[in-house]
Length: 117
Image (cartoon, rainbow, N blue to C red; front, side):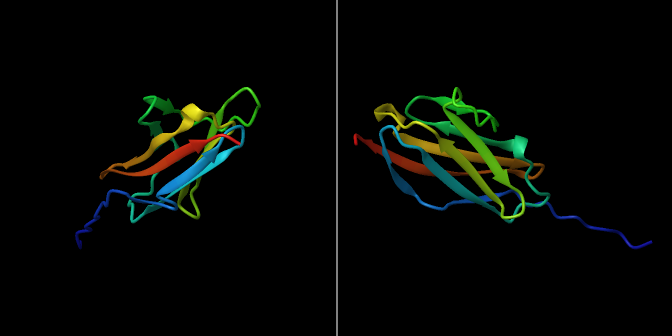
């Protein structure tokens, strides 16, 4: 019987935009490509954090107006997205997306600068 070798590869993350300007009261979309991962990354293994507020964004996909953000993962396009629905002047800082699979983890940072209308 021939032996089978399976190579696992941790995810590589690349920010779609490395820096963005968030305008107060509007929404802001941050996106990261998740590349080269084997086995594939599952949505529940993707976490966003904000370095300024130390806020952890869970895997909420709740689109109701009471939730200030939502997170999505398109497994076909391999794109993780965080939408901050109502940007405030305190929404700025570095947003880190970390993705994990059985081989390890990778991350990418999107820097956000906020300004008033």
